Image (cartoon, rainbow, N blue to C red; front, side, top):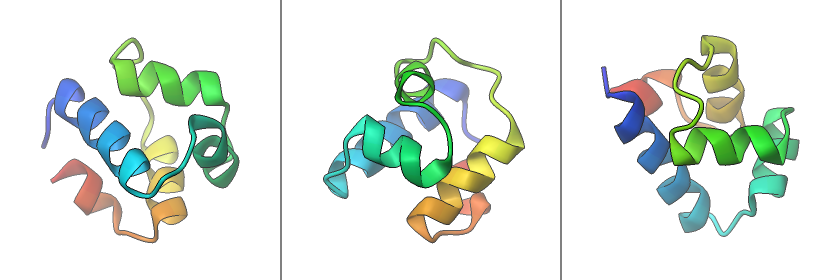
Length: 68
């Protein structure tokens, strides 16, 4: 499993590759832009599997791709 820092960097990179704002990703993942910002900066290190599942669904990838 990736470290929280690697997950944070991967989330930011993936979001930018898809040309999504934090707000747009938050809308797709049913969360807030502030929460996405905290994930991407590593300020939120203990995020739930539910959030990762929603992010994976928003990107149409398996959760294992985000964790592996």
